[in-house]
Amino acid sequence: MQLMKTPKSLDLNITTKCNLRCSYCSHFSSAGDIETDLPTEEWLQFFEELKECAVLDVCLSGGEPLSRNDIKELINGIVANRMRFSMLSNGTLMNDDILDFIKSTGRCNSIQVSIDGPGPASHDVHRGKGSFEKALRGLKLLLKHKLPATTRVTIHKQNYKDLDAVAELLLEDVGLPSFSTNSASHLGLCKQNSDETQLNADEYSYVIAKLLELNKKYNGRIGAQAGPLASGKHWKEMEETIKSGIKESPGCGYLRSCGGVFSKMAVRADGTMIPCSQIPHIELGKINKDSLREAWINHPELKRLRDRRDIPLKSFEFCRDCNYTAYCRGGCPALAYTLTGDENKPSPDACYRTFLEAGGKLPKSN
Amino acid sequence: MQAKNEFPTVNPMVVYREEFDDWAVLFDPDTNETFGLDPVSSFIWKKLDGKHSIEKILNELDKECEGGVPEDAPKHIEEFVSDLKNRGLIGYEQN
Image 1: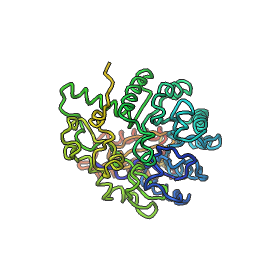
Image 2: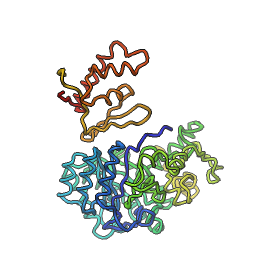
Image 3: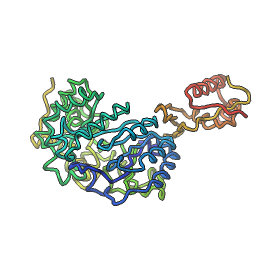
Image 4: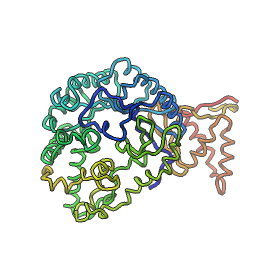
């Protein structure tokens, strides 16, 4: 696979500070946890390098990006260096002043706010008392300012029965064009709160069926790049492909789920370049000291991650006697690392056979 | 119509991004639009520096191409540059 000369976009964890401590946050229990944020000048200098590398956009996350007092200065730096930006936020710190400013730049691709329930009960249980009202207020402010708002619903043990009401709230009452979903995953703080947050096979089965049903009702306005909806769709396709007699699916049979390392990179709040925000332990160099372009092209760890796409699933004991390998891409490398200790292994989290063995069931096709 | 003493020059806010081999994209961060450039278009884009007339660009392209440029190349370059102008990706510099 050909490699671009520089990454197209970067995820920037501009802060480790956050006013919330959500029990399934992918941070706060990983190599991404650092004491101090990088000073403004360091980021501004780095944005100039991003311009030289013709990077098109950055995603600001954290922690909570709006907890940085210099957020306007950082956004001005992004704009001056010919980039667009998006932001992942908990929504609770939004106000007219910052949203007016963001709107005035004309460069915002999206701002994602997390909403996990139709009301405080199932949202606040893992995000903290009062956070639902503030997040919903933030989401409505984004819409008032005509900014491109998106919402992520993280599905967990306490909200998985609320999905009808969540869809009604977001798609009908608030009027979002769509929202995306995931489930609490074995990353960051979730690793230590797994029993209270992560879905078991029965719950996962229920959620797959419910999201597929809701997606039909709402004409595909519910999305997912990972989690129950994404897995459910993929696993149903697997079954249908097998039933139709096709021996293998294109691009499957190898560790090819994630193409991120071919187009993106990330930076931790301490300025360490990393392959992805969810793989913060692989250090590729320091911004403003090491060259981004050099790390992108030549860093052996990035090469190792890119080479995973040539590793056949059948080479793993875990997959050897599985009937689904010719239809499978092995799952997320970050979850493979947190679950097995190696990014270049299949992730048990995305494994259809594991799901079935645990008693999971896919809904019957209509 | 371009005046004789006006030379095309790129809009400095437009990003020229080389991707694979000599292929590239132009990206306008204000409109979020991207435009693909083949190797010949990329060659021309790099000459839009306010110092090259279209005739001069054509001559340099002719030298680069084995067997020279096709007969209708001037027309195509004019159209390409005019399209870039209409999309706000370039302007003209008085010399």
